[in-house]
Amino acid sequence: MLAEDFIRQEAFINGCWVYSHDKKTFPVTNPATGVLLSEVACCDVKELAFAIKSAQAAQHLWSQKTAYERADTLLEIYYKLIERQDPLAKLLTQEQGKPLAEAKGEILFAASFFRWFAEEARRSYGEVIPTTKTDCRYITVKKPIGVCAAITPWNFPIGMLARKIAPALAAGCSIIVKPAEQTPLTALAFAQIIDDLKIMPGLVNIVTTDAETAPIIGEKLCVSPEIRLISFTGSTNVGKGLYRHSAENVKKLALELGGNAPFLVFEDADIPIAVQGLINSRFRNAGQTCVSANRIFVHQTIHDAFVETLVTAIKQQLKLGNGLEAGITMGPLIDQQAVEKVKSLVEDALQKGATLASDKKVFNSATGLFYPPIVLTGITPAMKIHDEEIFGPVISIIEFSNEEAVIAQANDTQSGLAAYAYTKDIKRISRLSDQLEYGMVGINYSALSTAEIPFGGVKESGLGREGGRQGLEEYQEIQYLCLGV
Ligand code: ADP
Image 1 (cartoon, rainbow, N blue to C red):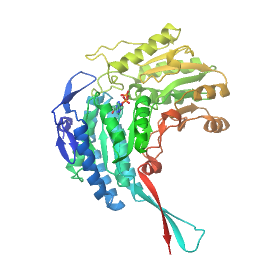
Image 2: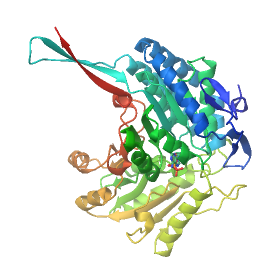
Image 3: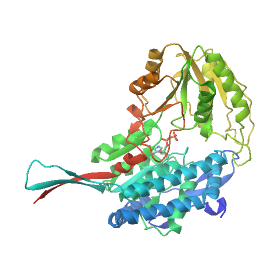
Image 4: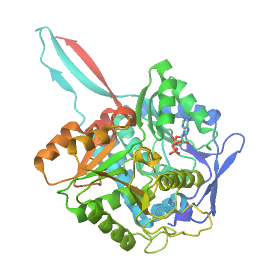
């Protein structure tokens, strides 16, 4: 099948392809070319109400399936994703912009969650707790939390979707997903898999909306008592709003919010390994990832050597362009707003004395959404880029000389998602693990995310963990059963 075969217009609710009641649609375009890919159904609260009703009915039936049956369904989805990896990757590149190799990586990443949670579903054990009395037994059982909702972002349109749908299904929950307005097509292509496999209607619902309707749908999800969990990946502000709205009915929230990852390169670091780790982390998805290395602290004794190696590696490795073309390693940013944000951070830094250490080749395109990979040095606290999340292909380097001070600087943020450090000193590694206030720490390694690990942050970076054994527990409640004997 071709990528084009998976392009849809309708949302997917109760196992049916549906338009919104007023036939309203919104456009989805290719950020590299500006070409219109599809007009997609703009659902509102009417369609959401239908999705909630369907999900409730499916939840009731699905929760009665054995873990073995649920695992089988997850594996079927896994194999379908593997089978369709090429057309799905092409579609993902078209709507999101990332290079084809990265898009393929994301499809496999998405598939891996179905495999992992199929396996976890069968190993989700309760406990028998030793009692203080002889006339009863204490038992805990894990139960599905109920109907779930997911709101997903555009930077990993299918990765984030899979990270939420797979554990929900494994736990025995149904789910309603609202994908990002920029990238609903990959989500609908996923729905095609659910449809083709004839999976229970209402178990997975994809409710598409435009940007204007997203807050209305979000609020409705928060105040609907039928929804027991909302899993959200996106900006900190939107996450906080969902948290506030959900307080009324004490809904559980799983939040993956913004990051502001420090990347510490100590004087004893292996420079080529640190440079490669930084390139992989910063330029993947053109820097549009929440775990991307954002504040780069380099020890003053190796600063110049590090920058020289980095600038050479960027020249050799990064080629900007349409992600569907061979040899392209970096695509466009998602939209004009993203480009403007990066531009203003860079201009502010340059005005306040930062140095552009690399070339900055202008890349002309139909959409104007391409921003070249660059390196800035001499970053000071007066510059906005010193503290803000960049979400673009810019490396901003801050020199440091003292370990204690740099750890304090690394922690000086309300974000706490991921941190990275490069050093060979085992005692320092232990100090870093103790002192870095982050949910995830990469030491001499920058590719953190896989299905097996608990992904998530502390402080304002979020609540809960996705993936790993813990990722299943997010979708479960514990029931304590006191059994008189
Ligand atoms: P970004 O700024 O990276 O696009 P957002 O937090 O705005 O991040 O978007 C992430 C997801 O949240 C998208 O699916 C978007 O449509 C959705 N969204 C945006 N605003 C709201 C809102 N107020 N309530 C619920 N969902 C929202």
